View 1 (spheres, rainbow, N blue to C red):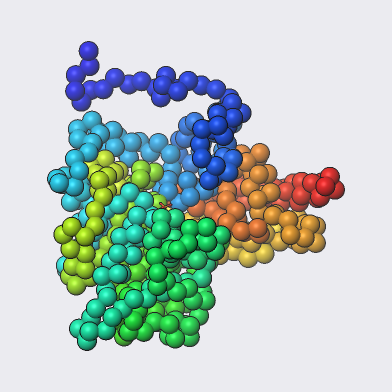
View 2: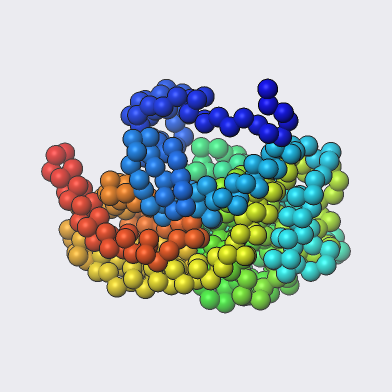
Length: 438
Ligand SMILES: *Cc1c(COP(=O)(O)O)cnc(C)c1O
């Protein structure tokens, strides 16, 4: 018999069995809700920047679980910290706290250079971090002069999550409209347009929500100077500036936070994706005592949020990023990838910072006319990439997004850059033959 804290090691395959990708996918479609469409592959194992599918094929993971696997897969330090925390104390509810929860909150406040009186709320995902932010914004309803605030401003192209509050902040109609009515009062203004911001943010505004770089929109950074001006406008109006760093935070851009070098102090930052190095956790950091007191005892909560294992995973992730020179790697490899992509005729435009990179495809050899009108070239490149052993993502019909592990090497990146011209040719050929068939 095993004693507590020395669990038997049993491979998960003993619980679920092994099978082919095709057979798992057939079972998937019979048992999983169809909201994600058909999964691209069935993945069974990961190591560093690589993953393997159920049929044994290897892939270079240039998406990192959508900016989540900051340290790649099966990072030994993160794995050992998670395992040892789980074997010690896994969950306690928020009637209790634990050392890892407190230490992680302190660490995030330090990394964010948050002023005295700043605080952290832990959630389990990005959308939940933004739900907390939404409720924070709602509490900014009455200020000293008695003005009633009811409006929240967000940007066109914004993605803030899929739960009802975060969905109200998200711009895309196809995501929103099936679920009307959404929480009221959210206005979307044109992206990057400071005049629209000046016109919309007033003394009825509770908050402005911004992503420093819109990831889901295809890696689109805010124009230079926009953030600082948004800070000035929101401060003058008494509105909160809430920065969604769910995708851009935790070293993704080569800084701990994408707004890091802007000098802007926001009222709140939401985090999730990379924070737990693959383990689910979200966080909302509120800046200063006034903002941190907007949500008072009993006004918000979560059962799992900030549990010992999730907070240990995040502490381990932050520690590894800090002690292993990861931010410098992100800056160097990111710069290398962007400049190499910009030289390819197949690439029309490159955007992003650090290892959050978006690029627009021209066509094979730069020939845009070689792609059928209205065809989804980016989706076809994703498929060609999978066949060649690369995982990338297509946030738009002409746009590829890379959000690889932050430990990606230049040599690993170069294998993809060398393959890209061929992937674009194969994708265009596949689209043309599909068109002939139909
Ligand atoms: C992914 C994402 C979210 C939602 O996070 P989930 O963990 O999927 O709920 C919110 N905001 C941004 C900017 C994101 O990229």
